[in-house]
Length: 322
Image (cartoon, rainbow, N blue to C red; front, top):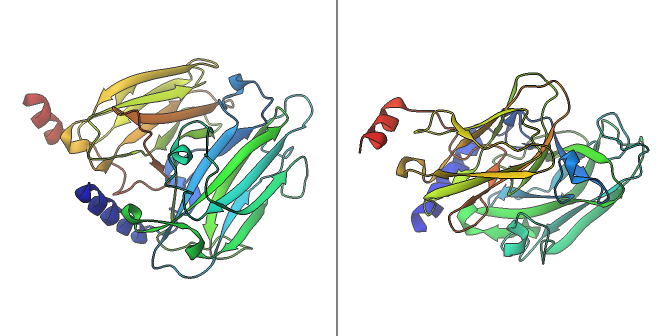
């Protein structure tokens, strides 16, 4: 466990070389269109399995200046959103800090159950049908880094932001950015965002390639990936230092599908790359999570800890030859 903590600290330190890329979710490197949250009356066949998305914001411990969590296009009924007949949806965004915001196990669950909204409520706003923030930003904050929950393994303060559909049946597309300014995106050096379950809209581009970057800890010897409502729209593959685009199970419309994959020693304490190859031009929303052999959810970071993995042919030969 101590080695794992040390490795995470080293990886967090690498974020300082890529300050701009860590601030946005989805990040540029993930090549994902938007985060998606549907109203709680929507059909899950649209791609959102639980109408709730939980993200965590990591602020380095040495950061003292206030920051903002900016939300792009939080309103309903705008250019990016998905209508089910007439727009009638409301989505509530809430920011939490303090004790238990991250360390409460319900907060890191793949389902919004129990005390998933643990911690101190710092800010909250409900967005409904409006043109006010269509293709525009709404800033939550300012927040003092001291208001977050200190997590020793990450050597920083962690905040939580929950987007939850509380009415209606339409889809809300949005992005997050961590900024030192309320009126523009100015990176907080060393900050990052992460989640344990993604619900996203893939890019509306034929043959697009999206990336999800889970961190694999030292305890994990196997993982199970689960994806929902991919509509069999291409392929899902795993890339690591010892795996070269291994196929993963892919879901059809409105169903979950899972597949298990062995984790080799070279993949522990590192990031793997889940690549989603989308073949169609149309809209496709997908939910995704990964658990280890203990059924513990694994975190996905907007910027991969330690960098995106590259397949190393010699390492692969070594492990398969043993």
